[in-house]
Amino acid sequence: MELYKLTIHEANKLLSNREISAKQLAESVLKRIEEIEGKVNAFNTITAEEALKNADAIDKLIQQGEEISPLAGIPMGVKDNICTSGIKTTCSSKMLENFVPPYDATVIERLNTHNAILVGKLNMDEFAMGSSTENSAFKNTRNPWSLERVPGGSSGGSAASVIAGQALFSLGSDTGGSIRQPAAFCGLVGLKPTYGRVSRYGLVALASSFDVVGPITKDVTDCAIVLNVIAGRDVKDVTTADKPVDDYRTALKDDVKGMKIGIPKGFLDKGLDSEVRTSIHQAIKLYEKLGAELIEIDLPHAEYALPVYYIIACAEASSSLARYDGIRYGYRADDYDDLEELYKKTRSQAFGSEVKRRIMLGNFVIGADYYEDYYLKALKVRTLIREDYAKAFEKVDVILSPTTPTSAFKIGEKREPMDMYLSDIYTVPVNIAGLPAISIPCGFDANGLPIGLQLIGDLFEEKKLLQAAYTFEQNTDYHKKEPIL
Image (cartoon, rainbow, N blue to C red):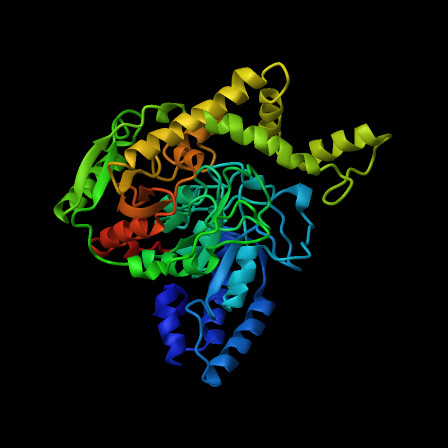
């Protein structure tokens, strides 16, 4: 077996037993990147030299008999909106094309402490705005299952790299589904933790009240291992919760007997691809067979989630992106007569069309004339959506839904913005409510493309999510399949 095909826990066992070296593992992954990156286009920056240097250091620790972390020597990729000291963090935008942060994000600090090995920064939709990674200023990342299709977004590079064997795991960010949707399109496990469970310090902001960092992995066990390291209070991020971090591996039990799983009324009706619907129904039947209790629940305000999300998220994005003015850092226009023209030309030349669209919409909804009609109303409906979920979790442990309404679509297929936004219809309500959710593979369509199942948990109930996901995984083999490149 090629080493790049290993899961984290498989590689850790081999490293701990000295059956392989960290350098051999890193070399296998870097060779894989070299062989297929021209097809997949997952990376913006590859850090091969530094990766091999770090692998040598970890091998010395192992030779000295030191006990190693489950992530020690494990090659990882990181979405290019998470700051890495001395390594470019571009957000896949011309605006930050040459930006090199002077510090690490908290999640990177924690992974470095556990001796994970960074092999590169991963392509994404510009400033995390998109659902297909077609909005990158640099390249289109391709889905390894079918190179003519998108890998999802905005963490498309994060998902494509893992399923293609270019990293054993990756980090993504999830504002409205940007971890779960690409995980579903690529046949992987993608976890969006509870808002406040993982530090956002060093994550380039899109919409600060929605953004969450989380892992994309090959299986649920790997997901628990990564979450153990990145979760927890951070004094640099006041939005992180002061709650102890569980050992999430203790949740990996093949048992859902008596677990109450909520099925939202109407979620499996109109707008859902028939093959996705069939796979979700089969997943529901499997949970029932395994002893879970299925309960229909009502989320009456979920139908408003998409407009609420785009109003609030665009308002926050317009504020977050105001800092890119050509003065302090980032791109600066060359030819201008005064300060106002510098601002206009810099932002016009360096931002892509989707970013401009969302800035304009955000400025519109928070303008004095429309603030109450749009932004304030959206905030009120956000509260109603949160209350719907709170009531549902009085009855159930976990809520089940599709991750996406379709499998991966072709590059260039969704040219209208609303068609693209509808890709996130099942994921954005979770971000609105700040809840944890996980996407796991639950089938394949007639074209051999993966289909994702989403499980949603109550606030800080990641352990229940992981147990429900792990049980499904142990009783199916979808996670064992891989694309041929």
